[in-house]
Image 1 (cartoon, rainbow, N blue to C red):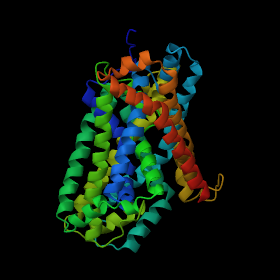
Image 2: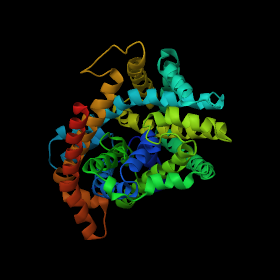
Image 3: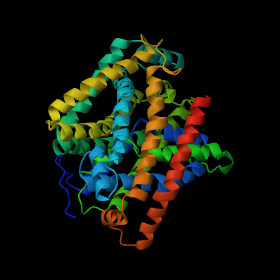
Image 4: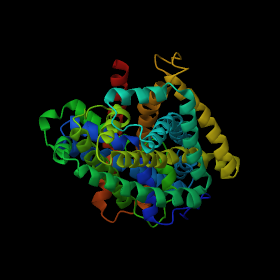
Length: 455
C-alpha cells in the first residue's frame, strides 16, 4: 500500500518523535507519584514489577497506538476509521478515537488548573516566599492560593495560552520546535537538581527509600498499583501517542522507538525520585506526603537549605516544563481532527478549542472556592473530571486499542508497520496485544472503579 501523506506534516527524525512522545509521557505524576509509590511498595521490588508491567502492557499498547497512527496518517479519530476500513471492518471503530480525544480534552481542563498552581509556585520561589517557612505556613500559602479564584484564573489562563500558542505553530514550527527546546531543558534541570540533592547529606537515605529491595512490602495491591501506573505513565488511551505516531517517519522502527520512550520515561521518574527524596529526608520531612509533597513539603525543604531558593525555583520550572509538554499532547488529537473535519487552519481551531477548554478549566478551579458546593455524584467538578477520565475513559480507550490492534487489524498491516526482522518478537507482541494487555487493562479498569467507589 502506498504510504498516506499527513496534511499536518511529519517529524524531522525518529529522535524528534522520541523526544515528543517522551514529553507527552513525562508529566506531573513522574515527578512525585512514581517515586512515592515505589518507595512505599517495596522499593526495588516494586520497580522490578513495574518494569515487567511496562514491557507486558505499556509497550505493546503504545506500539499499537503508534502503528495505527502511522498507518492512518490522520487524527486518532480518522486513523481508527481508515485502518478499520482497510482491514474490512466497521468505520465505527472511529469511536475509540473519539474516546481518546474527549479524554485528552477533559483531562486538559483540570490539568491546566494544577499546572497553574505550578506556575504560581515558580513565581513564589523566585520571590523568596518560602524562605525559612514551616509546614504550617507552607500549607497556608497553598490553601490561600486554592481559595483565590482570581489568582487561579490568571495562572490557568497563562497555561492555556502557552499550550495553544505551541499548537498553533503546527507539527514542525510548533510541536517539533518546542520539543527540541523544552526536552533538553527538562533533562538539564533534572540533572542539576540531582547534583544538588547529592550534596544534601541524605542522598544514601533517599536511594535506600527508592531502591531497597523489600519483597515483603510487595502486596497484591502494590502489583495492581504498578500495573495501573505502567499504563497511565505512557499517556496511553487518550490518542496523544496515536496522533504523534501519525507524524512518525515510515522508515523508523516502531518497536525500538517505543522501548526507548518507555526507558526514558522510567529513567526520568527514577532520577526525579533520586533528586527529591534526599532533600525531603535531609529536612526530616514526610516522604509519604502524596500530592502535598510538591506544594507543601518540598517548598519547606528548599526554604531551609543553602541555595534552596534557586534550586526550588529550578525544580518548579522543571515541573512546569513537564506539565507543558504533556498538555500539548492532550490537545493535539482534537486540534488535528477539527483541522481535518472543518478544513480550517490551525489558528482558528486553536482559538476555538482553547476558549472552550479555558471555560471548562474555570469550572474545575471553582471546585476549590466559589463552586465548592457543586456536587456531581458526590464529587466536586475537579474530582469528577479526574474520576471519569482516569477510571473510565483511559482504561476503556486502552482496552479497545489493544483489541483493535490484536483482533481487528490484519497481520498484513501490523507486520508491515512493525517491520520486525525477528519472527519470534512479532509473535510475542501478538500474544501480549491479544491476550495479556487486554486482560491487564480490564483488571486496571475494574480495580480502579472498585477502589474509587469503595472509598
